[in-house]
Amino acid sequence: MNKDLNKLNSHNSDEISSIGNDSLGDTDKGPKNSEYEDASVRVTPWDVEGQIDYDRLIKEFGTQSIDSDILEQFKKITGEVHPLLKLHYFFSHRDLDFILHKVEGGEKIYLYTGRGPSGMVHMGHLMPWMFTKYLQDKFGSKLLFQLTDDEKFLYSQDRTREEIKRFTYENILDIISIGFDPSNTKIIVDTVHIKHLYPIALEIAKRITFSTSKAVFGFSGSTNIGMIGFPPIQAAPCFLPSIIEGRPTPVLIPAAIDQDPYWRITRDVAEKMGFYKPAQIHSKFLPSLNATGGKMSSSKPETAVFTTDEPEVIEKKVCSAYTGGQATVALQRLYGGNALGCPVFWYLRYFFDDQKESDERFVKCISGNLLCGECKSDLARESKSFIAALKMRREKAKDRIQKYMYENEPFEF
Ligand code: TRP
Image (tube, rainbow, N blue to C red; front, side, top):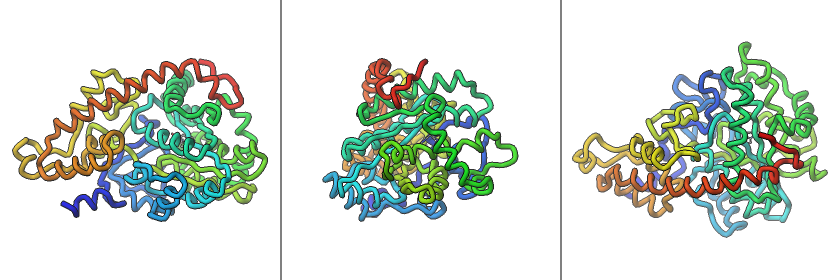
């Protein structure tokens, strides 16, 4: 039993079936990323599919794993280790040690994260944002939050500008509901704030060849030229803080690992442009609720709990969720369940259980002393109350959008 618990709490344990945190490209396959792709696994900024081996991703992407030294550094600054770090939900980084060093020395750093508004927001999207708010509170950092409405319009041939605009508005409500400090947080909507990004994007674009971008993003002859020109726009907020502050300013990007290609090209040009390389802290993905290996997607609403779901809908989604359970109660009692392959277990572990409760749940499950109905009922109850509280904050956010807009430039909907 102990061995199993060690496995659960070790870095390489999560035999989690993937789910993208990104829903764009519901219809298109999108470019291929030559760096991490085989027949069944895809991790690109536009597509995440298959059984992900996170250790392999660290090797293929050339990132660092979050080790005990990093956790110690965090502890020195914040006096604690956040559960999402302890649970290895954030599992990989680039230059996080450099950032923590700067924070420790009292230097101001910026946080930068974002969202591609290709659909409504589900719980998987919220976790990196909640962690970003935690960092903002602990470090007192300014945050830039980019909405890439241009990217999401360009990526899917089916999407209209009006649809993307509606999702942008709805997603902004979710972002504000996370509780970011309005005096330290600025939302950038690409089509609204492009004039602040464009001069930086030009400098970046001029330093990246088509060969590099083909290799990093997998662009091909059939990729539309808007997509090919887009990456410098997502790179630009990495350098915007240095321009705002008038001196090189360290930036940390909390984001799911699928965004890493953007940061690779940005890091390549940073020093040549007189900036620090942007640092990253990478998260895993939350698994799809309805099947192993399935993809969490805004176009397949049954795969996730959305922030606008009604309680009955949440109840139904959770009750019909895929689990790691056996086919019958008798078999479950005899063989135990497969907690590591169970999305209900992971939702509870990352969102609602504390580590002790979750470890106990794990042991009870795999030893046949817990039935799936009990976990589902815990998850349904917790998710309903979590979403109900979020919905109230979403309502209040409607009057607060303007406060968060970069340079107070209005986002009109
Ligand atoms: N491309 C991201 C997406 O599709 C959106 C994004 C823009 C982003 N800037 C970011 C995500 C910075 C994380 C960090 O969701």
